[in-house]
Image (cartoon, rainbow, N blue to C red):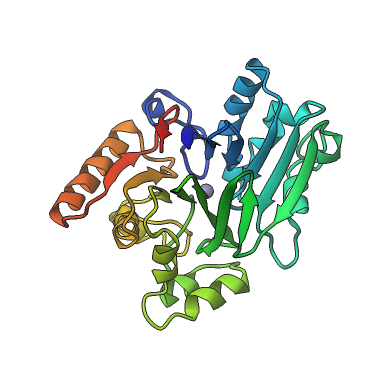
Length: 298
Ligand SMILES: [Zn+2]
């Protein structure tokens, strides 16, 4: 499998010279399977550049788009994804939904004519929707396993396994405990139910989900100091991210969903601190910070 990062930034895009190296676009990752089949992880602003490249290459598209959740930073690039405007292309959008709002409505609402000139039903490509809960589905000849992670409203994590290798994508996730659950507003009942069920560490279900992954791409939005004032906002500080990678015995960790207030130098510092923590705690995995344009072969 091959990964290419088109957007690494959380919450809002942050273009400019101080974010040039790690990137200012919101989440989007291109994943290619063995025969070049295309899976796209999230449709943040980074998907616009991916779309330009696909059009430039003249590639006809039959792709799966796995959306972690419908917060703006993960869907706002979709109306600018040019292959969706091309007849003959086919896109299957996979994600969860809430009790009250369907997956299709989540995507179409952001293209409501009050907010956008073109509506979902005007796109020329065939757009299909695949609603998932916690389950395992086939995508091309890969298996995709899903998990509810801890984030306001809801968010899905994905584990993609192909050719004996696994990649886990958890873009937005906060370590769960009862204090966090109380601080978090608008969480789907199913998330509280699933995490409250555990008698030991409720985050063990995340550690089990990522167990032995070759690559873990995980939320590392905050420093531990910043996190203190942001409990319940749905994101991890990097010490939890390191813990998850260690407990899950992953081979490589990629810090993801960089905070919009972190410039390139700050992300360098965070990465340096993480590498020091990994050495001090005798963790075994490799650690990188996601950067726009970065490519990884697994
Ligand atoms: Zn996000």
